[in-house]
Image (cartoon, rainbow, N blue to C red; front, side, top):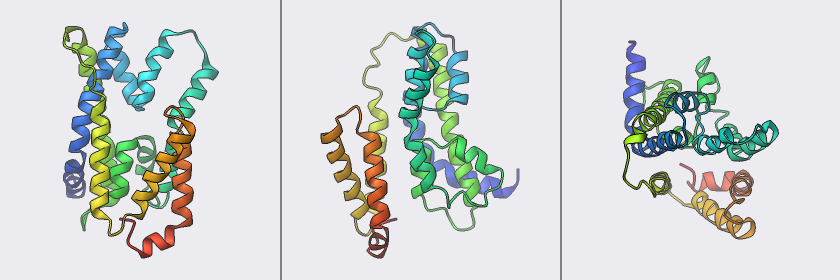
Length: 234
């Protein structure tokens, strides 16, 4: 393999280790859920490759078990995954000039890959396009592997697996702390915290995510230059 690819892979891999832990548990839980719902491991394998949508894949289980409702499925999918619109906008400049890799970078961008690719400092001499490519690829491999293993061994699980979904919450807390430590000032972090708290109070726990993302995007756009001057963006 070309040394350029090897260097990019080696640079990306350590950044994805926290995702391996989270996706391993959650992917396994998803596979188990599919298994106890009556689906063979082939279903989580295909869905993890084609959908690769985390929470959407969990919701898709109930969709498969309910009556055929394409419009409802479309609306639920758009509502759950709408945040990726804002991820895409944030990555427009970073994806420029990446050639065919850009197709997979767009397709494979999940929450965790976006967090890494947006904040990570790519080492000097490493192709940032291939770095982001391997971040996406490794994270998807973790999720697919966990899902398939859960689908295969789910019927043998007898312990109570309740609470495993907190793994992802804990992982995002760690990412937030890491970003906090990188910033000279914490303007962007405070914008995120205040916007999230305000939207949670106004819209409730079930509907605050999209309004929060919109508020953060607007505020960061308005105050981008002052924040950059103050060193508040990593």
